[in-house]
Picture 1 (cartoon, chains in turn red, orange):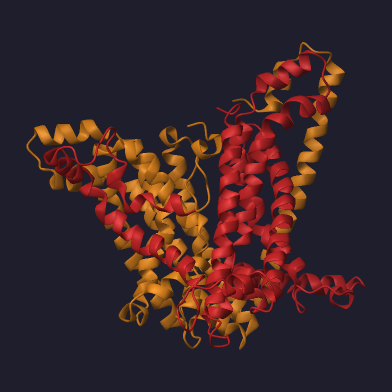
Picture 2 (cartoon, rainbow over the protein chains, first blue to last red; picture 1 turned 45 degrees about the vertical axis):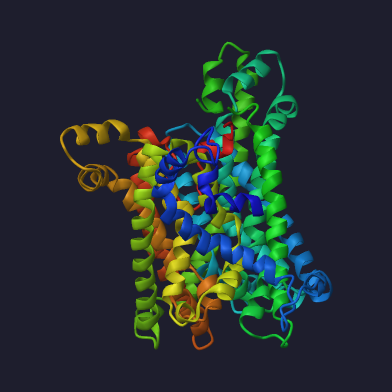
Length: 310
Length: 284
């Protein structure tokens, strides 16, 4: 993460090809003047993004009271309830990456194989754009009204003789959160996988059919191998999106569910024992590290996907 | 890029029954998938409307704290939008004109706010922000500029890409206009659509942002909805639906704008999460 964030702070060093620092003062001055135009932007991003992130990383290794170097925050953040928090968050994110990933893929394929200008296609793409951006508080309340203990669907099921809440279901557990996250994860998947589907050349399917391949063979030998890197890349993005989501889970469960973002939130709300404040920073750093790993894997997969999908 | 359904129509030289069979099946699974997923999306909306009831909607506006919370959200939206435009428009124009080599770097830098979770960012911001900023909700506005950066940057960048910027600037220059005049009278009018979509996305983001506002302890509109829930469930569901409808209108507007210029922009409407074809293909 750190070296992706670094460039905006020091753009002058990478801007001009062949710039050799310290050769000619006049030339350096000219180059500095050329990058001057992006200095306000660079400073803003440094203050608003880089420095806060670095501050989190530094604080994670500082004793909350004395400010001296310590590993105890990181240790605390990776054990006990905080370890459980990471575990739940990761498991939840895996589930709400893979399941909506598969459903989203099917929807995208259904849309994609509809005729290009068809109404279905237009409507689905617009709706996906709208729903993918829909999260947070309103979404939480939508599901409380649906599957909460007094929700409408809960009522329907009770009328049918099946009381969800008597069977151990509540909306305020990881399972409930998973059901809710699908609401923005599926359309997000549709939006990000569609371009990859468009790279799937119709000629390949025609060629396969001409050679007598049934549908499953086409998928086994052409479709899946070509699409797999893109699909996995998109699933990683979904993982990241669910891993760092805070608003929906917080609004829905009032902070009772043990997910890392919610736990970080309790540190900021001041519900902590004095002297432990920096554990929150260590948790935040942990999130950045995990997201960083995901993004590196994503970049590698994209490079691989590019081989077939121009 | 014709759809697969079209291809099987074109390839009628194959034995007819098999082609037919193959065309029938996708139709069925397609409708099953779409109907099930459609139900999953429609039922909660229906449930929320039913749960809130018609009477709850007008009540939203007369609730204690509504006006304050909504005004604060609008004020933050205004601050964020103004700073975003002032910061981004000249920078992006400058990069396009003078430092085109920096464009890829700019793209990766501006995508970072999506990568770094807002919850992490607010932890860091509250660590380092000086006291006078922490005492003011304007700090949120300043941070929202960072959060809105990916969307603002992408809209404006797409808009500029569709222009022949160099020719415009040279033509304007040869008529004697200096750069600020060119920016104001030539480039900005041409960027109107892109700026509008940047503004709409930024406003939608600010009006819906909960994480940072709640942890910075300011009662913006989404924070108010949650705090309010304790006193009246139906009214806060109604408030959620209202928030939702407003955001949807905004985003539909964007989608329409996006479709209108899709000739050049590649057909993908800019939404908060739409990812351009280049990111997915990732070939560069």
